Length: 398
Image (cartoon, rainbow, N blue to C red; front, top):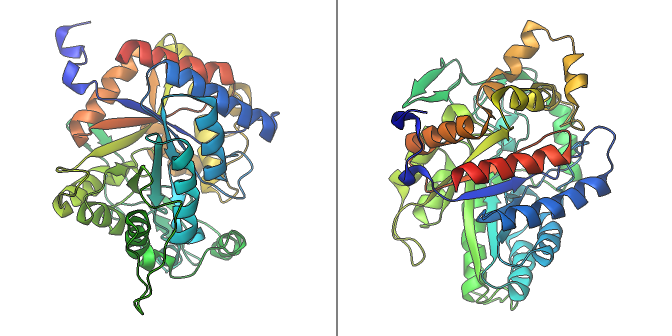
């Protein structure tokens, strides 16, 4: 390896973990949850900084649907690693319940709890030809009323490469909006919740400080949240309200390259442009997500990652993420040109290879985005391969 190919010390920012608790074909929900606890213990020993759990509902292949409960289990199963949400979807929750849940967690695990918050964008997603991306902090497919919808970047924009980082063309998807409305209603989505997001974040902060007041001036308290050592994060997929809210409140921001790679640089720049120093952060702090599969060599990693496109197709065709297929099942799928186009942005931006290959790709992501930290999500059909991917990455990176 030449000197130019080596990852510099400056690029070796801390690595964290984002876990969806994926369920593979043939496995049970209990298997997936036990795998999460095992992976948390192992990645803690490997030196990863955080272990975050996603929130997804009514999805056959994803078991992380109750993040506060799962965070409690992971925190109990570990001793040092920070544990948090990536992200609590605020369209399904109130500021009070989130403050209570995460305050409770922090009282038992002080100094270890992160609260990642995602903004729902469902109202705008259902508007015809709106061109906005998926709900911030989630991997929910976009939808439009009887028409096409694109990712977080401007529709029709061509793929570009910036500082070595691929920014793919936003995908175009045609989904059943009525079905999505019914699903969101089942999990308690409140129409218009996206417009309340900034105030919800401020309300959670007020409950933590103990100075919350209603519009009528009533002082209300959430005792378990007051003074709780919870670090609030905002996750975003576009240069919209999430990025602005994080910046205006001086909070750390997570840009979702793994969800909406086409708009990651715009999201980061919008956050930095809006940033106002706070008590916790005197400068912007950016974490960027990446889908990663590491194998002992490039060829083996490619085989392990081969089901990923089929899994993304299950999401974007409106089924919800299916149980994760095996390489053999993926190889048997008769791909059409339209299907390959539908998943191309995600497949092309997954970082796959041997340890040195993936480390170089992650260094490119860090340089292009100026990230202070990277959060890695890895899915493989076999749990042992997923664990080994994190082990190989940590051995190369650290």
